[in-house]
Image (cartoon, rainbow, N blue to C red; front, top):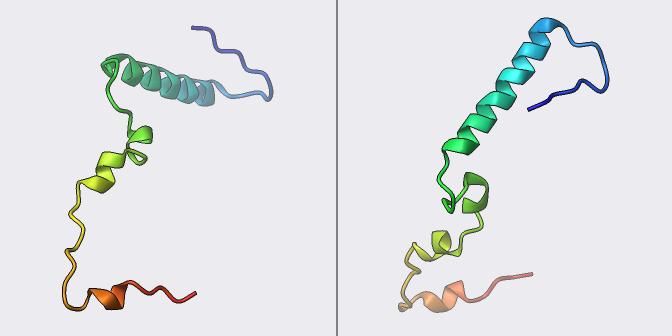
Length: 69
């Protein structure tokens, strides 16, 4: 892996911190098994919404059917 500073003049401490973050992200990506859902994609998973039961119609369900504009 090659990292190149394109703009600016980072101190050795700033460069070491940036490199530590890049290496940690690369190590985390390498330990994730292929095909596993990523946390970024989990929010759009339809099964997340379907996991909750919808309320059943009852005697007062007519009051929940109108949404004023």
